[in-house]
Length: 117
Image 1 (cartoon, rainbow, N blue to C red):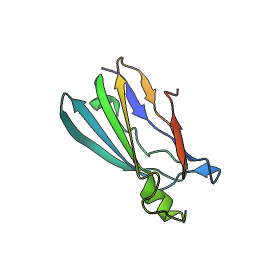
Image 2 (cartoon, rainbow, N blue to C red):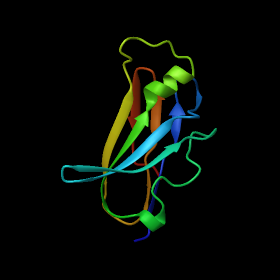
Image 3 (spheres, helix red, strand yellow):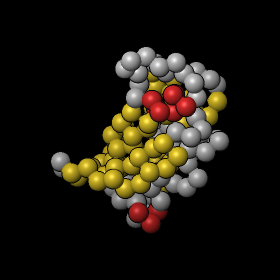
Image 4 (cartoon, helix red, strand yellow):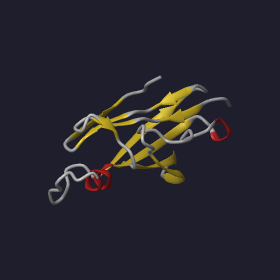
């Protein structure tokens, strides 16, 4: 099945790509959550390779976990206890073989996402 999954993380509070943000990918099958991969964003806020490349692509339910709290700590955003945003889980379905792009727009007190192109 030909398709792949990518992301792009932008730090909207700082007006720049979110470099060094750890992302985990999981496949969800019923009650089973299987870890597939861990990647870190580069200087452009993207991963150096597709999160889910063509060779591993399959339709189904997936979850990306963006480790926003650790990133915010690293870039010097003053933490509150507990931090408002820690890990951001995004669960979504892949229903067809195509390019799925799931960006994250991040600030210390909010985020948004969408299916991009």
